[in-house]
Amino acid sequence: MLLPRLIGNDFFGSLKDMQRVQEQLNRLFYEEGKSAEFPPVNVWTSPDGAIVRTEIPGIDPEKIDITIVNETLTIRGSRLEESTKDCHSCHRKERGFGQFVRSLQLPFLVDSDKVKASFKDGVLEIELPRAEADKPRRISVVSE
Amino acid sequence: MSTEVMEACKKEQENQKLQVSQKPEAEQTRAGKVFVPRADIYETQEQLLILADMPGVVEDGVDITLEQNILTIYGRVEEPKLEGYTLAYSEYGVGDFRRVFALSNEIDRDGIQATLKNGVLKLALPKSKRAMPKKIAVSVE
Image (cartoon, rainbow over all chains, first blue to last red; front, side, top):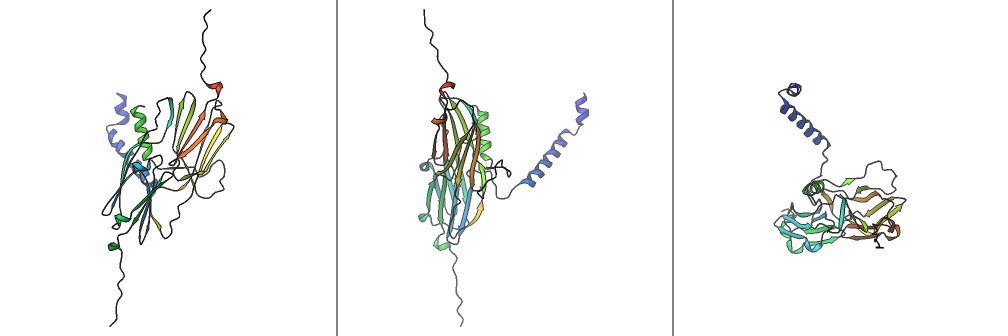
């Protein structure tokens, strides 16, 4: 009886208001360049190509699958859960596990024959040379 | 493991690397960012197991110190130098890792083992004999 009077008829309306305020706050604190995708990537570029680095700790390098189709790079893999058969308690579990797929659209065509990938200390590095045909060409003007 | 825990883990994974607060309890002498590595802690009958994600840390870049009951792990990460390249897009910050754990007294300090593989630090902390469960046989008279 008392409750509806306190909240009023506009209970869901005020919920929406709260949501709106929250969204605005989120936008305020949003930091550029951050993403929730896994694995997070850093991309370095040069006129000759790009280097993609990504942090995937605790994965078997042989289980990483990298494919390139035209300008799209796809990284696939899965991280296994540590076997905890003989553990009688798990105090903290922050590390995620499972399958992941990550695709990146590159700003140029890649020479897929020359792509090199290395995995060291949990960091995957993929070197992506730009296709010769895609490189910018300087055209000299001949004065007549 | 319950599905709730699994969901929580998935959510956690979506979050970004957590940076150590700007005002740490001890001032650092090395420039750069310091992150808190994500960690799992398991307990078995004989030992406590800590797993920490520290990508980019090499074996001799790990410092593990145990003072009183405070276990500190520190991993140095060298910023990659790529000649002729410029960072065009960044989703994660590169920096050292540091995390502090408070241990109970029942750890056998001399038996602590640490291994680093594919960027994951694994710490095995054996329990002291005193803390292990003891089986008492009942003799029949």
